[in-house]
Amino acid sequence: MDFDDLESHGTLQGDLDAELDDVAEVSCPYCGESSELSVDPGGGATQEYVEDCEVCCQPWLVRVRFDGEGQASVSLATLDDE
Image 1: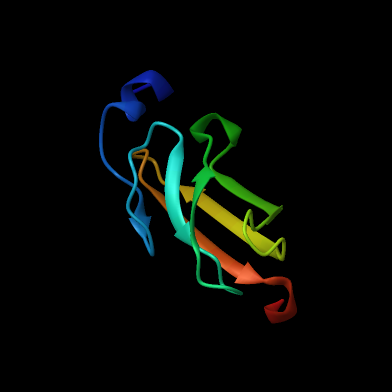
Image 2 (image 1 turned 60 degrees about the horizontal axis):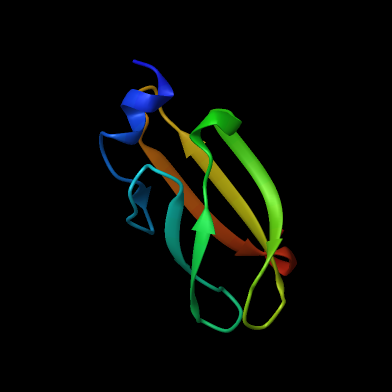
């Protein structure tokens, strides 16, 4: 199964639900505001990066993990937690 096929199957698992296309709905761990986060199945099975909240500008530590079925789990943490 290639990534084009993965995009048409399943949803993200974990703290959020989103289509596998490229967007996940998340809540900022600082201010609690909802925001859309782009996810990239082509970026590797395990991804970790820092992205700022669009509302309060605080930095998030974003972790994305895709399993063999194309299902992803996405988690956010404050940099203070790490």
